[in-house]
Image 1 (cartoon, rainbow, N blue to C red):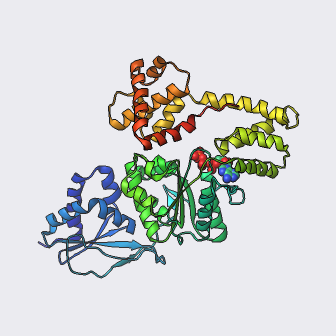
Image 2 (image 1 turned 180 degrees about the vertical axis):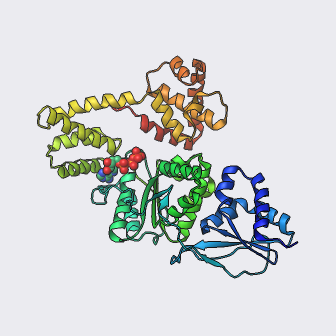
Image 3 (image 1 turned 45 degrees about the vertical axis):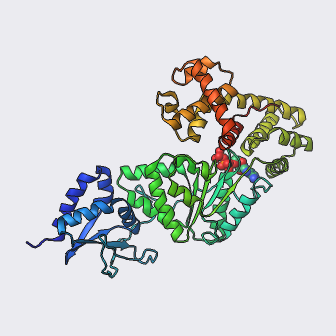
Length: 471
Ligand SMILES: Nc1ncnc2c1ncn2[C@@H]1O[C@H](COP(=O)(O)OP(=O)(O)OP(=O)(O)O)[C@@H](O)[C@H]1O
């Protein structure tokens, strides 16, 4: 009986469907078209190189199995990859799945209507901007000891994206220290100097949501196409990818593809790669390929320069002693410093007062009160859950998984150290545990800090976030 490619492929699909979930089947197998069957070689057409890579990595065994089932041990599978007309980035090629020594000539198929690389989840993004804030530039980013390395690496990358060895460039640092500002400055600089480059800024959270939407709507192809056409990808807060396995997988492929094609990748994180929790090793090792630079807490001189610069650009004069007072008092991060300045200006204009030392002190007192009240049990639980990439609910649940137990004990420890809640009240907020559990948690954390230097440093870093500020 002569077999035709469609019926062979249909049989293959039938077996594949049993072996993979419905969603995976719809995403990765439904879009495939059988093209021909010749000499026991079935050729299938896949929509993109990315698609092929994904099948290779995730479904090669099942494909091999079904091809052997249908065509016998000599059966082979070849891919034909659609390339966009006029786009020489994607070289046509064919690949043999089963072990086979014969070389195959690449085959190419032209799509009459090229895929729109700028379509994502049904929306044409070609006209949209890069999601960059035009105010975040190198000019407005004050240089100081706390950020010198990161800033100059960023500047080098901005001038030669994808060409320097700083690829990827990973900027990390605590809350409000200027990560977003710096990476957006890089993006704006690339756009200004290298006209026509497709630069995209996206938060990891948004990336994840777009991916989930694409999965839900069977638009993975659009999703990957969109990201594979980017010249410089800026992805903020990669720690949020922790624990999100499928999002990490697609990001891994996008990362590889962009990197291999000399495109620039810029990332931020609130901690160094070695402390990123819930991220696959293969992704972490790639994060270390380029340069990792940190942003530290701003030193006094930088804080003074930031205040002066801000006031100058807003056309507001404030006396030297006030600048110094503010710079001395607010030493945690720049966002907080900016918040204090905004409040100060608001107080002065509402009360029709001159900005002087007295007003500055008064303003700061109110703000310190607000900041202190933020450090409650909820805030600590949220911060620690994010840090350890676990769910807040798990902190309150009965689960005894090691990583959750540690996160729970650390949270209890900080609640004891940084809030006025009683042991009983703390236990209550962790799923109704009793006060002896809290005592045990505090003791365990203290013990671990004694014996484990790395853990102690991690705790010191976390502590900064809960530091109660006093004027
Ligand atoms: N070196 C700097 N010079 C001038 N302004 C700065 C500098 N660093 C940070 N800022 C300002 O401080 C504010 C907070 O910075 P940004 O949002 O970039 O911090 P972040 O590290 O990304 O914080 P988060 O971790 O919360 O996302 C912004 O308004 C930014 O413009």
